[in-house]
Amino acid sequence: NFICDEKRQRFWAAWASQYLSFDSKAIEDCYQENLKFSDSHNIPTDQILSYCKYGQFTELGSEYLNDQIKDFVREIQENNPDSTLTVGIFNDHDIEGCHSTEDSIHHKLNMLMRLRLLSNTIESYSECSLPMISK
Image (cartoon, rainbow, N blue to C red; front, side):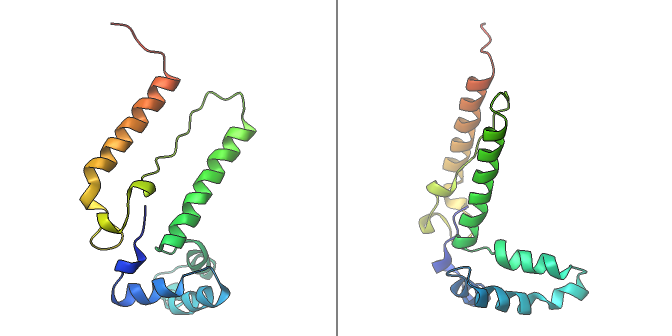
């Protein structure tokens, strides 16, 4: 999903402004801020560090996670050239923007368009990978 960092407010805005890049200061600040959850929520410190490196709900974090998905799909396709498995990426990120969200993360304002894109994506992959049945 597209994350509209400029619509962030209060606490979220402060963190989003620190995450303009994945620099070591931002990661360390995040890590120190979230260490308190290690004991209270039984979260291992390596998972807190991973969250701070890769799981931020900012546009930069979203792009990073999207790239991870694309790399995974590319690797599967390259390592299994004879596979009949079809893997598609539902990229609704590119139809979202600050215009389609009121809270910076949830894109309710264009839900119909997102559902239509998902439906068309599923239909096109179905037609590519499944034989058509004549009536």
